[in-house]
Image (cartoon, rainbow, N blue to C red; front, side, top):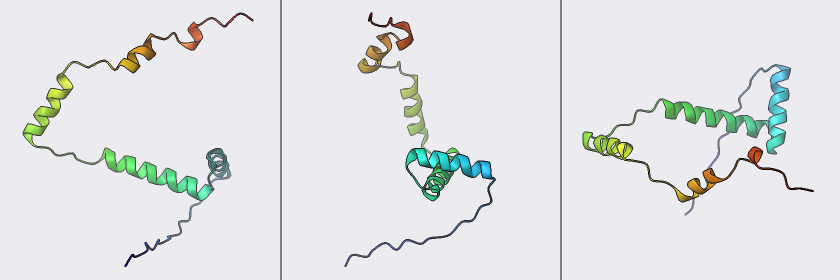
Length: 98
């Protein structure tokens, strides 16, 4: 029997200056999101970043040695990147004659 996931909603209240609300509303509108969706996404994304920044990664001495060995190896060129870097920058090209 399949169980549906029951979503719990927890209201969150904040006091924000009018200028803060205006910038949040503008950004939310540009993304096609509601204020609530935009703020929830931004808060969750920032929370995930903070957690990742403060997460300790553990590995065995052998695993660490292999990791350092990979970092010490010469880089291999990526053909697509080489081609892209050979192209002149848009500001370096002359516009076509009209």
